[in-house]
Amino acid sequence: MTMERQVRSVAGANASAVDLVTSEVRRAVLTGALAPGANFSIRDLADQLGVSHIPIREALRRLESQGLIILRQARSASVAPLSSADLAAIYRLRYVIELPLAGESAGKRTPTEVARLEALLEGSRDHDPEVAWQAHYDFHEALVHPAANEWDERILHTVWMAAERYTHLVFDPTQITEEERARRYETHRVLLDAALADDPDAMVELLRAHLAANEAKIRTHIAALERL
Image 1: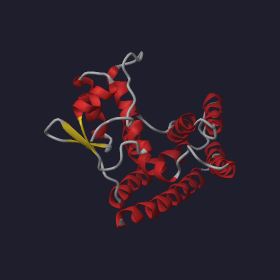
Image 2: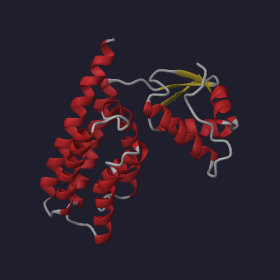
Image 3: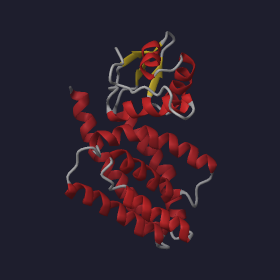
Image 4: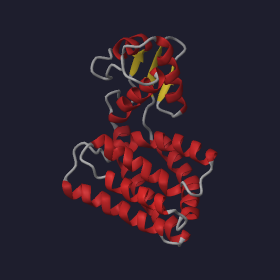
């Protein structure tokens, strides 16, 4: 496939070329600009992004480790397909790792950490979809941060990144009503209140219900796609 309009050039940007390529390709996958199962050549990608093949290959290796890209032996790659089995595996890991960490973190925050949670919740309803989505990602990270060690966070980041392409399908932040924006805010407000209370069991159950509701909606959407 040609890469026209799927990705944006990163030439001349003031950051690591590998980081920029990773971010841009990841954005294209999450938004569907690069569709599930789509094949593309590394040469076309390098031309479109305005960088050499070296940062392209390193970025694609990163994205492959996150389950977003499949690298081929030839100079090509493809976007990992979406599947119900993949979704189930992602959420199984979230339940096993994320829930107990969120429970252990309940009521164990400094004033600075509390203020950050409040700011992230507010940012999650920003009208700029990129700001809102990043705030939502960081909010879930902050829910487990007090109890998480380096390995917990490393594994969870991989799982969350894999989950994002599924949540983008159903909870696309680019075109939502104000009513839906308020509903999402209130849903996460409940989680924030639980995170501040010294009740680990309540935190775990509220987060479990939140994740399960999202998984069910995504599963319905994916099942419809798999029937096509």
